[in-house]
Structure formats: C-alpha cells, structure tokens
Image 1 (tube, rainbow, N blue to C red):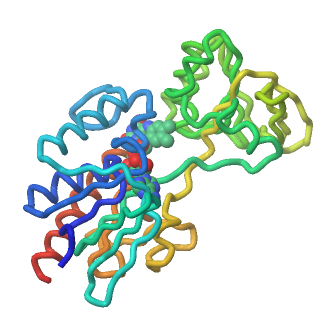
Image 2: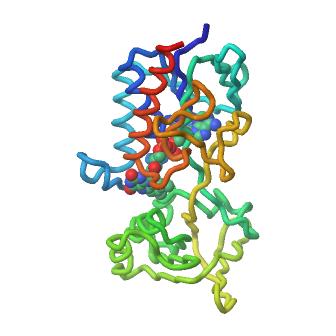
Image 3: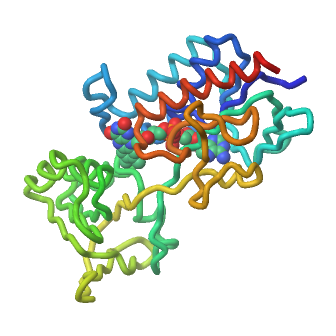
Length: 306
Ligand SMILES: Cc1cc2nc3c(=O)[nH]c(=O)nc-3n(C[C@H](O)[C@H](O)[C@H](O)COP(=O)(O)OP(=O)(O)OC[C@H]3O[C@@H](n4cnc5c(N)ncnc54)[C@H](O)[C@@H]3O)c2cc1C
C-alpha cells in the first residue's frame, strides 16, 4: 500500500498540467513544491507565446494554472524533496527536508525544472541577494532611476532587459559573445535609448563595500577591462537542472538532466519526468505542459497495470 497513486515533485507548468491530467484519470495525487506553486513563470514579466492567451504576465498564467488544479481539488504541500527511494515492492518513498515529511506513492513524476546558472567569479557569492539578482520582476522596482547591468544575451536576458529599461535610468547588457535572442526582441532592445549593448564582454568580478557597487568586465578577445558602476546586476546566463535530489535513481545524464522516452518514462518503472528538467531541445511553458500531460497519462497506465 502507498499513501498516493502519484506524487508530483514540482508545481511549475509541467507539474500542474500533470496534476490536472492525473486527477481526471482518477488517480489520487499529491503535488509538492519547495516554493509557491507556479514555477519559474511566476517571475517572468510577460509570456507571449502560450497559445490562446495572447500576452499574459507570467504570474497571472501561474495563478490560472494553479486555480485549475484547485478546482480539481489537487492537494498541494510546501515541501523540499531531498530524495526518492524505490522499494523492492516498487513503492516509491519521497523524503523531504522538512522533519517527518515522508510520502509513499506507486508512481512519481519528476518536474523540478531548472535553477539559474551562476558565473563563479570573485565577489559573486558575497553579492547574490545583495545586488546580484536573477529576477527582474522581483527586484526591478528597486532599480527605478538607477543604473543596472544585465549579463547574458539569450531570450531571457533580452526580454528582461527591455522590462528593466522601462524603469531604470540606464541598462547595460553585457554578453560574452553576441545577442542570441529572437530577432524581434533584439531589435526592440537595441531601439531603446537608455540601453547599451556590449557584445564580447565577460563579467570578471563584482565589487562593492558590503552592498554591490558594480561589475568589472573583461573584453573576451583583447583582455581590455572596464568597470561599470551600477546599483544592480541581473544574471541571465542560462540554467542548470534542479535534479540533485534524484542522483540516486540513476535516471540523469552527465549534465544532470533526466533521461525520459517519448512517453516520459525514465528507466525506473513508475518514475516519470516532465518539463525543463528533462533532456530536450526546447524548454518552454508549452513543451513543459505537453510533457506533463503525457507523463500523467503514462503514470495512469502504469498504475492500472500494477
Ligand atoms: C527569465 C525567463 C523567461 C522565460 N520566458 C518564457 C516565455 O516567455 N515563454 C515560455 O514559454 N517560456 C519561458 N520561459 C521558460 C519557462 O519558464 C519554463 O520552460 C517553464 O517554467 C518550465 O516549467 P517546469 O514546470 O518544467 O519547471 P519550473 O517552472 O522550473 O518549475 C519547477 C518547480 O519545481 C520546484 N522544485 C525544484 N526542486 C524541488 C525540490 N527538490 N522539491 C520540491 N520542489 C522543487 C521549483 O520550486 C519549481 O516551482 C522563461 C524562463 C525564464 C528563466
């Protein structure tokens, strides 16, 4: 016997979609998340490419998805999962950081997404949360009338830089190679008067006096250095899988992403995966939701055949 048919770890778009499909397939479901439900989109300014909703704030889309799970009475617990064990009888035990929080289930869907990558340069550890941010939505308001720096040149960096330019005095975007975001987003960024784009520049050090005062940049090809005084630096230099807690399962590739087949099955029977934590080419809301639906259907099939 297990507490639940299915435990879903992570309540971003993948986890919430999996929950909706699993409940409709008549499974008893528990959804866990270390943070508020919604996943990364909570901190995304605008989502413009989720079909059927036009332009919507990430937070609004997250709330709508969570409301949908609540209309279906999906239980949700604030818990940080630290390990999943598989018993000889196939029952999965989900152990959490919080004392006494242990759940059992016949099937588990891993939907823990990714975390922000960091640079590992001097000063970074000291100023994360104290000048260095990964979330323009959370910390942008504090930049009103100030100079800020955005590191990175992908879609996230460019879109968030455009958002910040609406409130900051100036935004400097520094990118190691060149802007690689969608052309329309790059054009928009370059058209803004208070934005400077520095291509071919690396962040070499963060400096300050207890709170961040700026970032030292190094030109990649010449080694030339320059210091940019600023109130805040926003890092958008990529993501790493949030899968440390699944190391023991033997389902991760070398980069830490979960290997799953087209039915979102991992190599461990009864363990499925969905969303950004999975090996895939396109990490977006729409693909996370699609994975979640397939994973839930596969979990239902697995449980029906136990
Ligand atoms: C800045 C930015 C802008 C973006 N803009 C867009 C966009 O415009 N359009 C688009 O389609 N996509 C966009 N994306 C991508 C989109 O956010 C992701 O593809 C999507 O959120 C993935 O959903 P997910 O459910 O797989 O993972 P996530 O949304 O990352 O959710 C994972 C959840 O798992 C939880 N979790 C992690 N570890 C644990 C643990 N050990 N225990 C319990 N819970 C855990 C996390 O707290 C989180 O809530 C953007 C991403 C970023 C970073």
